[in-house]
Image (cartoon, rainbow, N blue to C red; front, side, top):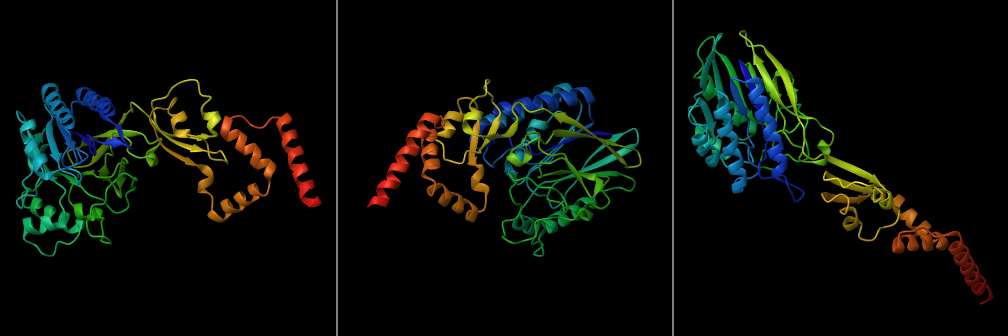
Length: 381
Protein backbone atom coordinates (compact mmCIF):
# COMPACT_ATOMS: atom_id res chain seq x y z
CA UNK A 1 0.00 0.00 0.00
CA UNK A 2 1.22 3.47 -0.92
CA UNK A 3 0.63 6.32 1.53
CA UNK A 4 1.45 9.99 0.93
CA UNK A 5 2.17 11.67 4.26
CA UNK A 6 2.17 15.45 4.67
CA UNK A 7 1.36 17.84 7.52
CA UNK A 8 1.66 21.32 8.97
CA UNK A 9 0.50 23.35 6.00
CA UNK A 10 -0.51 26.29 8.21
CA UNK A 11 -2.78 27.75 5.53
CA UNK A 12 -3.42 31.43 6.20
CA UNK A 13 -0.05 31.98 7.87
CA UNK A 14 2.12 35.05 7.44
CA UNK A 15 5.90 35.19 7.62
CA UNK A 16 6.76 38.14 9.86
CA UNK A 17 3.81 40.03 8.36
CA UNK A 18 4.30 38.87 4.75
CA UNK A 19 1.36 36.86 3.35
CA UNK A 20 2.24 33.33 2.18
CA UNK A 21 -0.82 32.70 -0.02
CA UNK A 22 1.15 32.40 -3.25
CA UNK A 23 3.82 30.31 -1.52
CA UNK A 24 1.15 27.89 -0.32
CA UNK A 25 -0.37 27.67 -3.80
CA UNK A 26 3.06 26.88 -5.23
CA UNK A 27 3.60 24.09 -2.67
CA UNK A 28 0.11 22.59 -3.01
CA UNK A 29 0.44 22.38 -6.79
CA UNK A 30 3.60 20.30 -6.26
CA UNK A 31 1.82 18.01 -3.79
CA UNK A 32 -0.98 17.51 -6.32
CA UNK A 33 1.65 16.68 -8.93
CA UNK A 34 3.13 13.98 -6.65
CA UNK A 35 -0.37 12.54 -6.12
CA UNK A 36 -0.98 12.53 -9.86
CA UNK A 37 2.37 10.87 -10.62
CA UNK A 38 2.48 8.35 -7.76
CA UNK A 39 -1.25 7.59 -7.36
CA UNK A 40 -1.08 6.76 -3.62
CA UNK A 41 -3.79 4.66 -2.01
CA UNK A 42 -3.99 7.05 0.95
CA UNK A 43 -3.36 10.76 1.46
CA UNK A 44 -2.63 11.79 5.07
CA UNK A 45 -2.57 15.37 6.36
CA UNK A 46 -1.44 15.04 9.98
CA UNK A 47 -2.75 18.27 11.50
CA UNK A 48 -2.14 22.02 11.53
CA UNK A 49 -3.93 22.30 8.23
CA UNK A 50 -4.66 25.92 9.12
CA UNK A 51 -2.51 28.35 11.06
CA UNK A 52 -5.22 29.42 13.48
CA UNK A 53 -8.59 28.32 14.77
CA UNK A 54 -10.39 30.98 12.73
CA UNK A 55 -8.62 30.89 9.34
CA UNK A 56 -9.35 33.42 6.58
CA UNK A 57 -11.81 32.48 3.86
CA UNK A 58 -8.95 32.28 1.37
CA UNK A 59 -7.41 29.43 3.40
CA UNK A 60 -10.71 27.53 3.56
CA UNK A 61 -11.15 27.97 -0.18
CA UNK A 62 -7.58 26.79 -0.81
CA UNK A 63 -8.18 23.54 1.10
CA UNK A 64 -11.57 22.96 -0.54
CA UNK A 65 -10.08 23.33 -4.02
CA UNK A 66 -7.20 21.02 -3.11
CA UNK A 67 -9.49 18.23 -1.86
CA UNK A 68 -11.78 18.63 -4.86
CA UNK A 69 -8.80 18.20 -7.17
CA UNK A 70 -7.59 15.12 -5.26
CA UNK A 71 -11.00 13.52 -5.63
CA UNK A 72 -11.09 14.34 -9.35
CA UNK A 73 -7.60 13.06 -10.17
CA UNK A 74 -7.07 10.07 -7.87
CA UNK A 75 -8.80 7.33 -5.92
CA UNK A 76 -6.79 7.98 -2.74
CA UNK A 77 -8.52 7.65 0.61
CA UNK A 78 -8.25 10.96 2.50
CA UNK A 79 -7.17 11.14 6.15
CA UNK A 80 -7.26 14.51 7.96
CA UNK A 81 -6.80 15.31 11.65
CA UNK A 82 -6.85 18.51 13.67
CA UNK A 83 -3.56 19.86 15.00
CA UNK A 84 -2.95 22.26 17.87
CA UNK A 85 -3.35 25.28 15.57
CA UNK A 86 -6.69 24.07 14.19
CA UNK A 87 -10.24 24.34 15.46
CA UNK A 88 -11.32 20.76 16.22
CA UNK A 89 -14.95 21.52 15.38
CA UNK A 90 -14.02 23.11 12.07
CA UNK A 91 -11.77 20.22 11.02
CA UNK A 92 -14.53 17.79 11.97
CA UNK A 93 -16.92 19.65 9.67
CA UNK A 94 -14.48 19.24 6.77
CA UNK A 95 -15.71 15.69 6.34
CA UNK A 96 -18.15 17.02 3.76
CA UNK A 97 -15.20 18.15 1.63
CA UNK A 98 -13.82 14.62 1.53
CA UNK A 99 -17.08 12.99 0.40
CA UNK A 100 -17.55 10.71 -2.62
CA UNK A 101 -14.76 8.36 -1.56
CA UNK A 102 -13.09 6.69 1.40
CA UNK A 103 -12.13 9.19 4.08
CA UNK A 104 -11.64 9.69 7.78
CA UNK A 105 -11.68 13.23 9.17
CA UNK A 106 -11.10 13.74 12.90
CA UNK A 107 -11.47 17.08 14.66
CA UNK A 108 -12.99 16.50 18.11
CA UNK A 109 -11.92 13.53 20.21
CA UNK A 110 -13.94 10.34 20.03
CA UNK A 111 -14.07 7.97 23.00
CA UNK A 112 -14.80 5.15 20.53
CA UNK A 113 -12.00 5.68 18.02
CA UNK A 114 -12.92 3.53 15.04
CA UNK A 115 -10.39 3.28 12.21
CA UNK A 116 -10.82 3.61 8.49
CA UNK A 117 -10.20 0.13 7.08
CA UNK A 118 -9.05 -0.20 3.48
CA UNK A 119 -7.67 -3.23 1.71
CA UNK A 120 -5.03 -4.00 -0.88
CA UNK A 121 -3.82 -7.27 -2.38
CA UNK A 122 -2.16 -8.16 0.95
CA UNK A 123 -5.26 -7.68 3.09
CA UNK A 124 -6.83 -5.00 5.30
CA UNK A 125 -5.07 -1.94 6.72
CA UNK A 126 -6.57 -0.05 9.68
CA UNK A 127 -5.91 3.69 9.85
CA UNK A 128 -6.50 5.29 13.26
CA UNK A 129 -6.71 9.09 12.99
CA UNK A 130 -6.01 10.66 16.40
CA UNK A 131 -6.64 14.43 16.48
CA UNK A 132 -4.77 16.74 18.82
CA UNK A 133 -6.54 17.66 22.06
CA UNK A 134 -5.56 19.36 25.29
CA UNK A 135 -5.64 17.43 28.53
CA UNK A 136 -8.87 18.92 29.88
CA UNK A 137 -10.78 17.89 26.73
CA UNK A 138 -9.36 14.36 26.93
CA UNK A 139 -10.35 14.05 30.60
CA UNK A 140 -13.94 14.86 29.66
CA UNK A 141 -13.98 12.61 26.58
CA UNK A 142 -12.48 9.54 28.24
CA UNK A 143 -13.81 10.23 31.76
CA UNK A 144 -10.30 9.89 33.13
CA UNK A 145 -8.96 12.36 35.69
CA UNK A 146 -5.50 10.77 35.41
CA UNK A 147 -4.94 12.51 32.05
CA UNK A 148 -2.56 15.35 32.89
CA UNK A 149 -0.10 15.60 29.93
CA UNK A 150 0.10 14.99 26.15
CA UNK A 151 1.44 11.46 26.69
CA UNK A 152 -1.69 10.61 28.68
CA UNK A 153 -3.90 11.94 25.89
CA UNK A 154 -2.13 9.74 23.33
CA UNK A 155 -2.30 6.77 25.71
CA UNK A 156 -6.08 7.10 26.00
CA UNK A 157 -6.52 7.52 22.23
CA UNK A 158 -4.34 4.51 21.43
CA UNK A 159 -6.18 2.35 23.98
CA UNK A 160 -9.50 3.28 22.36
CA UNK A 161 -8.17 2.62 18.85
CA UNK A 162 -6.71 -0.81 19.72
CA UNK A 163 -10.16 -2.14 20.59
CA UNK A 164 -11.13 -2.04 16.92
CA UNK A 165 -8.13 -3.87 15.45
CA UNK A 166 -8.66 -7.35 14.11
CA UNK A 167 -5.90 -9.95 14.28
CA UNK A 168 -3.45 -9.76 11.41
CA UNK A 169 -4.36 -6.20 10.38
CA UNK A 170 -1.58 -3.85 9.45
CA UNK A 171 -2.03 -0.65 11.45
CA UNK A 172 -1.32 3.00 10.62
CA UNK A 173 -1.60 5.66 13.33
CA UNK A 174 -1.94 9.35 12.45
CA UNK A 175 -1.21 11.73 15.34
CA UNK A 176 -0.16 15.28 16.14
CA UNK A 177 2.42 15.12 18.91
CA UNK A 178 5.98 15.92 20.04
CA UNK A 179 7.86 12.63 20.24
CA UNK A 180 10.95 12.29 22.45
CA UNK A 181 14.20 12.93 20.60
CA UNK A 182 12.77 14.85 17.65
CA UNK A 183 14.40 18.04 16.33
CA UNK A 184 12.30 21.17 16.73
CA UNK A 185 12.00 24.53 14.95
CA UNK A 186 11.42 28.03 16.31
CA UNK A 187 7.98 28.39 14.72
CA UNK A 188 6.25 25.53 16.55
CA UNK A 189 3.78 26.36 19.32
CA UNK A 190 4.00 24.41 22.62
CA UNK A 191 1.46 21.61 23.04
CA UNK A 192 0.86 22.19 26.77
CA UNK A 193 -1.00 25.05 28.38
CA UNK A 194 0.54 24.28 31.77
CA UNK A 195 3.94 25.92 32.11
CA UNK A 196 6.64 23.47 33.12
CA UNK A 197 4.73 20.34 32.15
CA UNK A 198 6.17 17.43 30.16
CA UNK A 199 5.24 18.04 26.53
CA UNK A 200 6.83 15.04 24.85
CA UNK A 201 5.50 11.56 24.13
CA UNK A 202 7.59 8.41 24.00
CA UNK A 203 7.73 6.59 20.67
CA UNK A 204 6.82 3.47 22.62
CA UNK A 205 3.31 4.89 23.03
CA UNK A 206 2.70 3.76 19.45
CA UNK A 207 3.91 0.18 19.91
CA UNK A 208 2.13 -2.17 17.55
CA UNK A 209 1.65 0.36 14.76
CA UNK A 210 3.40 -0.43 11.49
CA UNK A 211 3.61 3.24 10.51
CA UNK A 212 3.08 6.38 12.61
CA UNK A 213 2.34 9.48 10.51
CA UNK A 214 3.16 12.43 12.74
CA UNK A 215 2.44 16.13 12.53
CA UNK A 216 3.52 19.14 14.64
CA UNK A 217 7.28 19.40 14.03
CA UNK A 218 8.36 21.13 10.84
CA UNK A 219 11.52 19.16 10.02
CA UNK A 220 11.16 15.90 8.05
CA UNK A 221 12.58 13.16 10.27
CA UNK A 222 12.14 9.70 11.70
CA UNK A 223 12.27 9.48 15.49
CA UNK A 224 13.99 6.47 17.01
CA UNK A 225 12.54 4.04 14.49
CA UNK A 226 12.13 4.38 10.74
CA UNK A 227 8.35 3.91 10.90
CA UNK A 228 7.75 6.71 13.46
CA UNK A 229 8.02 9.73 11.22
CA UNK A 230 7.33 13.44 10.70
CA UNK A 231 6.82 14.50 7.11
CA UNK A 232 7.62 18.10 8.09
CA UNK A 233 5.98 21.26 6.78
CA UNK A 234 6.01 22.04 3.05
CA UNK A 235 7.19 25.63 3.71
CA UNK A 236 9.80 27.19 5.99
CA UNK A 237 8.19 29.28 8.73
CA UNK A 238 11.31 30.51 10.53
CA UNK A 239 14.87 31.58 9.78
CA UNK A 240 16.19 28.56 11.67
CA UNK A 241 14.78 26.48 8.77
CA UNK A 242 16.96 28.33 6.26
CA UNK A 243 18.43 25.94 3.71
CA UNK A 244 16.29 23.04 4.90
CA UNK A 245 14.81 20.96 2.08
CA UNK A 246 11.06 20.55 2.46
CA UNK A 247 9.25 17.46 1.23
CA UNK A 248 6.33 15.07 1.42
CA UNK A 249 6.88 11.41 2.30
CA UNK A 250 5.70 8.48 0.20
CA UNK A 251 5.40 5.39 2.36
CA UNK A 252 5.42 1.88 0.87
CA UNK A 253 3.70 -0.45 3.36
CA UNK A 254 4.66 -4.05 2.58
CA UNK A 255 2.59 -7.18 3.24
CA UNK A 256 4.55 -7.86 6.45
CA UNK A 257 4.13 -4.31 7.78
CA UNK A 258 7.64 -3.10 7.00
CA UNK A 259 7.92 0.32 5.39
CA UNK A 260 9.99 2.06 2.76
CA UNK A 261 10.21 5.86 2.69
CA UNK A 262 10.78 8.14 -0.32
CA UNK A 263 10.91 11.91 0.09
CA UNK A 264 9.62 14.09 -2.74
CA UNK A 265 11.08 17.61 -2.44
CA UNK A 266 8.84 20.68 -2.38
CA UNK A 267 10.61 23.65 -3.96
CA UNK A 268 9.70 27.03 -2.44
CA UNK A 269 8.43 29.98 -4.43
CA UNK A 270 10.65 32.21 -2.27
CA UNK A 271 13.69 31.20 -0.25
CA UNK A 272 14.01 32.03 3.44
CA UNK A 273 17.56 33.33 3.85
CA UNK A 274 19.91 35.63 5.71
CA UNK A 275 22.10 38.25 4.03
CA UNK A 276 25.09 39.69 5.87
CA UNK A 277 27.46 42.56 5.16
CA UNK A 278 27.97 46.31 5.30
CA UNK A 279 24.93 48.29 4.17
CA UNK A 280 26.66 49.84 1.15
CA UNK A 281 27.88 46.41 0.05
CA UNK A 282 24.36 44.97 0.23
CA UNK A 283 22.94 47.93 -1.67
CA UNK A 284 25.42 47.27 -4.50
CA UNK A 285 23.36 44.27 -5.63
CA UNK A 286 22.08 44.66 -9.18
CA UNK A 287 18.92 42.52 -9.04
CA UNK A 288 15.80 42.77 -6.90
CA UNK A 289 15.11 39.62 -4.85
CA UNK A 290 11.66 38.60 -3.59
CA UNK A 291 13.09 36.13 -1.06
CA UNK A 292 12.06 36.37 2.60
CA UNK A 293 15.15 37.96 4.07
CA UNK A 294 16.79 38.64 7.41
CA UNK A 295 19.48 41.33 7.22
CA UNK A 296 22.54 41.33 9.48
CA UNK A 297 24.63 44.48 9.09
CA UNK A 298 28.34 44.30 9.87
CA UNK A 299 28.72 48.10 10.00
CA UNK A 300 30.24 49.24 13.29
CA UNK A 301 28.18 52.44 13.31
CA UNK A 302 24.38 52.68 13.10
CA UNK A 303 23.13 53.41 9.58
CA UNK A 304 20.46 55.91 8.59
CA UNK A 305 17.09 54.30 7.75
CA UNK A 306 18.71 51.00 6.71
CA UNK A 307 15.53 48.93 6.35
CA UNK A 308 13.94 51.39 3.93
CA UNK A 309 17.07 51.38 1.79
CA UNK A 310 17.39 47.57 1.91
CA UNK A 311 13.76 47.08 0.83
CA UNK A 312 14.45 48.82 -2.46
CA UNK A 313 16.31 45.63 -3.42
CA UNK A 314 14.80 43.15 -0.97
CA UNK A 315 11.11 44.12 -0.66
CA UNK A 316 10.45 41.16 1.66
CA UNK A 317 13.18 41.97 4.15
CA UNK A 318 11.46 41.37 7.49
CA UNK A 319 14.23 41.54 10.11
CA UNK A 320 17.33 43.69 10.59
CA UNK A 321 20.05 43.46 13.21
CA UNK A 322 23.64 44.60 13.66
CA UNK A 323 26.23 41.87 14.03
CA UNK A 324 28.05 43.91 16.67
CA UNK A 325 25.00 43.63 18.92
CA UNK A 326 25.64 39.92 19.14
CA UNK A 327 28.96 40.50 20.89
CA UNK A 328 29.16 40.45 24.71
CA UNK A 329 27.96 43.67 26.34
CA UNK A 330 31.29 44.34 28.06
CA UNK A 331 33.12 44.10 24.72
CA UNK A 332 30.67 46.46 23.03
CA UNK A 333 30.95 49.02 25.83
CA UNK A 334 34.74 48.91 25.63
CA UNK A 335 34.62 49.46 21.85
CA UNK A 336 32.25 52.42 22.30
CA UNK A 337 34.53 53.99 24.90
CA UNK A 338 37.51 53.49 22.57
CA UNK A 339 35.62 55.20 19.75
CA UNK A 340 34.86 58.20 21.94
CA UNK A 341 38.53 58.43 22.90
CA UNK A 342 39.49 58.60 19.21
CA UNK A 343 37.87 61.80 17.86
CA UNK A 344 39.42 61.31 14.41
CA UNK A 345 37.70 57.89 14.03
CA UNK A 346 34.49 59.35 15.44
CA UNK A 347 34.52 62.15 12.85
CA UNK A 348 35.08 59.66 10.03
CA UNK A 349 32.20 57.47 11.22
CA UNK A 350 29.91 60.52 11.44
CA UNK A 351 30.63 61.52 7.85
CA UNK A 352 30.02 57.99 6.59
CA UNK A 353 26.66 57.82 8.38
CA UNK A 354 25.49 61.22 7.13
CA UNK A 355 26.45 60.95 3.48
CA UNK A 356 27.31 57.27 2.90
CA UNK A 357 30.95 57.89 1.88
CA UNK A 358 34.07 57.53 4.04
CA UNK A 359 36.32 60.46 4.85
CA UNK A 360 38.69 61.44 2.03
CA UNK A 361 42.40 62.02 2.53
CA UNK A 362 41.94 65.78 2.17
CA UNK A 363 39.15 65.79 4.74
CA UNK A 364 41.23 63.61 7.04
CA UNK A 365 43.98 66.23 6.87
CA UNK A 366 41.55 69.04 7.71
CA UNK A 367 40.15 67.09 10.68
CA UNK A 368 43.64 66.22 11.91
CA UNK A 369 44.69 69.86 11.67
CA UNK A 370 41.60 71.02 13.55
CA UNK A 371 42.06 68.44 16.28
CA UNK A 372 45.73 69.38 16.63
CA UNK A 373 44.85 73.06 16.90
CA UNK A 374 42.22 72.27 19.53
CA UNK A 375 44.70 70.22 21.54
CA UNK A 376 47.31 73.03 21.36
CA UNK A 377 44.75 75.59 22.51
CA UNK A 378 43.81 73.42 25.51
CA UNK A 379 47.48 73.12 26.50
CA UNK A 380 48.01 76.93 26.38
CA UNK A 381 44.99 77.49 28.61
